[in-house]
Image 1 (cartoon, rainbow, N blue to C red):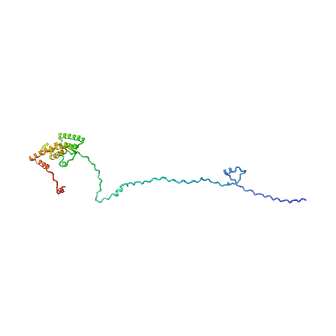
Image 2 (cartoon, rainbow, N blue to C red):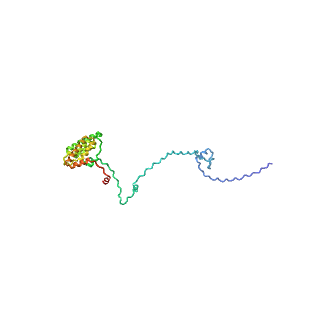
Image 3 (cartoon, rainbow, N blue to C red):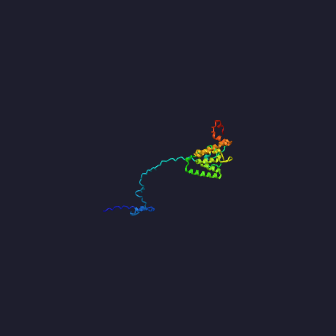
Length: 265
């Protein structure tokens, strides 16, 4: 007899609770591309198996800055401080009361030499005559000037302008002409004038004749001797002026003593 196996009771079917709805999240392009070959996309966000690695450039040694070539610094020369008007005012010492302010002297200009005056030269001016070069040392250019001046003096003398004639003769003498000095002496020689003439001066004639002799004029020595003879004759006749000139001419000048020199202003 067959024994019937007892039936195993089947468990009652349990109703499954519904799964909670999961919000669908869009998958990025990179993820969707990687999961394109899967059978069915998962509704959940899949994390990558390996975390992303951020790329950094390889570390390189920092270049050492090259020091710039330094040029030697030359110190600038100290310039002299400019003197301002204010500084000049401060440095100027104050003037005492009653003292006149200093005045700036105007620049002096050398005036050109004026021509010799037309009047007769005085004996005091002729006591120290100028010393022009000797006749033998006169330059050719000056010789031409001397000839022109002598001719001009002769022409003025013939016209009766004795002052202008003397000026021309003196200019010739100053250029080294002994003849100019002799002709100038002749204009003062009392032998060529009337006794009452004011143009005559024996003293001036003697001085100019002597200058002509120093310049080598031979005729001047002869005229000087003739004038001395004329003065002696005039003094013997009672001419006091001739006697005075002779005495002053022939008497050498005596040096002053110490007392006289001290008393002389």
